Length: 351
Ligand code: NAI
Image (cartoon, rainbow, N blue to C red; front, top):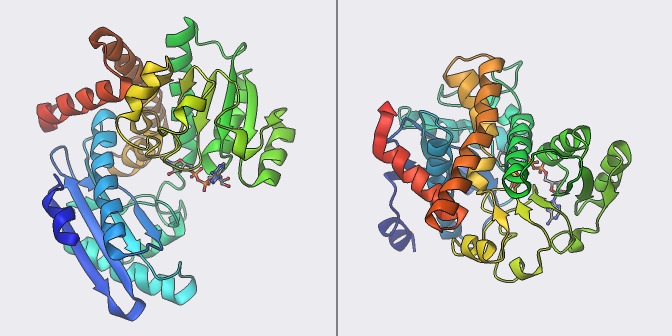
């Protein structure tokens, strides 16, 4: 399994370590360093088998290459997976993170890590005890803290760009937006949309969380199993990946899909299915780049918050370009975004 996955992968290198004391597979996938160090988060997760973890890491690292390239960052793409027998806490967690940090350090800066599913800014503080190649520590730990608010701001600008493209004006006043998942990103996004005057619908598996946010923001709650098929102008997936599939796309009742979740499409061809239904899809890795922009701008490039905000706002311009390219070439927005990535990679580091 490992052999097949690695043989068919188009990335540069994968470092594999089995940490016997904690029964943890540590997999660091460096997909591309063409534009700079391969940057991407560390996912901690329980997998059925180590090859499932490797498959996840390889796929996610390629997505980071696309995300960083199209965001105009001088970064390549990478991802790390810690495949644990159970999500650890306390000393055991610290032990795993320290030994994982040694692995990251041994790669000499070709991979730069950050938070991802089940890893936090505090975890990055621990990683930083053994390597300098880490972004997203706590502010007290010398980092720039949570990237979620910037991700939300980027998605907000992206939604406006998409609304502008479809309706001819980016005014939110007459538009309804359904946010699926009111966690770290979705909650901030919902606040921005409410402020902008959108009619807001909120949905979360944690219904109490959705209700609380809805009460604060004057929004409507949609039961989570009905989120995808509820009529709205914009459906914004901010919970989990794989929400747009052969099975769900025919049930959508929206004009636009634009949200923070990674890997929203079940398969690349689902972008074509959305386009065939006349639904404008904002490619996930274009619209959700605010988080990595936040980390790279403040921590790697030494920029201030004003410059970071400018870069996050530019997500709207990148998306508008993607929408125009798709229309001009008669291709899906997913295919258009891939062309933009290819052009940026071909231009190399000087772009
Ligand atoms: P989070 O864990 O804080 O929030 C996720 C929310 O979604 C929770 O409230 C959870 O109860 C809810 N949820 C989970 N499954 C659901 C389902 N099937 N239906 C409805 N609600 C569901 O996560 P966070 O940080 O807000 O991230 C949201 C998404 O955005 C994730 O897919 C993440 O990978 C992606 N993302 C996050 C970035 C960041 O900076 N935090 C950056 C780029 C992408």
